[in-house]
Length: 225
Image 1: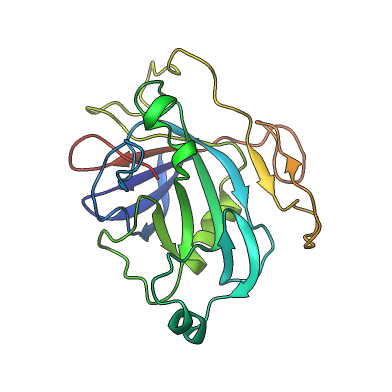
Image 2: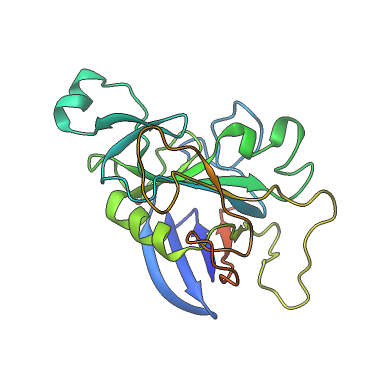
């Protein structure tokens, strides 16, 4: 599997064996592409999904720092906190694979807390509007979350480089950290502790889960976050 995020078109496309199986409208950073910490831009280059957060939780669940607050988004809650940057329903936390590009130092995607996540129904898709993350409609992120196995590579092509290109090899340097999923896939409770889902294992713990590749295509380079 491979995910491709097209910044000019503001779409996220899911491919399986080279065949398009899903396409969604998204919203990337209103500041455009960029990797610098504090830029509020969507980062470019190859990534992995470091964590899947929110399995089994109700739609519109509100997250702060990847933890459910116990709130569910509503127009009334939105009116009470009009300036809040809502992160809802599911989170796919991204980690860069290219040292000096989107990993380590002041360009580290994971330390910038760049996610693919759900958004309120009032959030407009099809145009840039986030502060770095990739926003999706709640039903779309639930569907994507369930289809993408834990630990998939997420890539954005740089100068035409595609993760699925023949002869592609991972970049040199330290491998990405293993992915995590929280809460555990079996059942969530407010006191549940994080469970580790090793690369190559599904959320149910079975080995041999297929990996998902993804690429993000901005107007200049590529982005994911």
